[in-house]
Length: 176
Image (cartoon, rainbow, N blue to C red):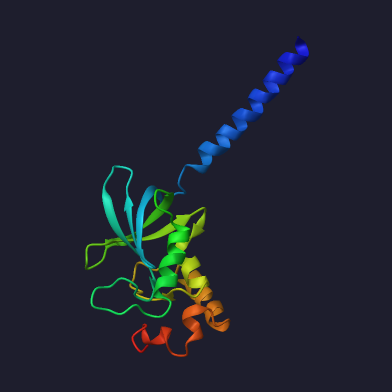
């Protein structure tokens, strides 16, 4: 009987520890909030639902991706790929962390933010993979600028995606 009690007690402790780990994993990092992805619009825009149920169109800070859905604009090289990669990182219905910019909105009333999926900065991953360039840099929304610029330099050196077409990213995707 004593061995059975020890076995159950050990099982309870192990399960309890896993439960605590699970609960900790669902707490956003300081300065971030949990949001649910409704859908990815394109490589640098996503629609989310905040915890209070509010629906927000979010523009990812400090990055620019080629157009894939802009009205009256042809799909630009790597626009669909950037959008597809963003969809891989932020699946519909997935809970991600959102870190609001300061100021929180752009001229089109979109929320400005960094998004974190599975602990990774989505804005930075798009730059690292060569689907986005660093762009729209306006103080004081420059918190991760250094990391993004470093990621861009590496993507550029390796000729990743948008950087595989000479002059394309530098033209803000307008010359191709």
